[in-house]
Image 1 (cartoon, rainbow, N blue to C red):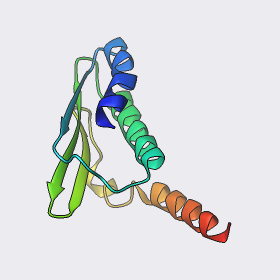
Image 2 (tube, rainbow, N blue to C red):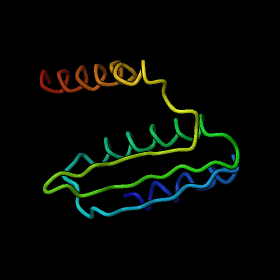
Image 3 (cartoon, rainbow, N blue to C red):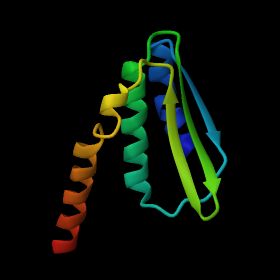
Image 4 (cartoon, rainbow, N blue to C red):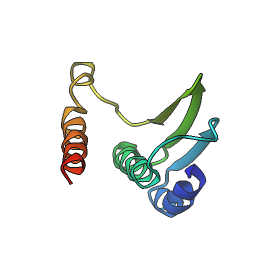
Length: 105
């Protein structure tokens, strides 16, 4: 999946004079493919928007026992430490709402 996402976004990264690197070290992930793809595209788009020209974005996966860590790292300005604990609350809440809506269906 990482390679497909990279192929899809590579032209945009080139257009913005950014480098996109992929380091896939976990082959299998038990996840909803459509949702995982959506999350990867959102995170990479965000990284592209906040990384200055000439910078780089790295998408990597790491295996930790039976868990997989997926990371998007960039050379942008980053998130201020005082906002790092709360910046994903809205995103988390949205995911919870969608999950609850699916349970009702």
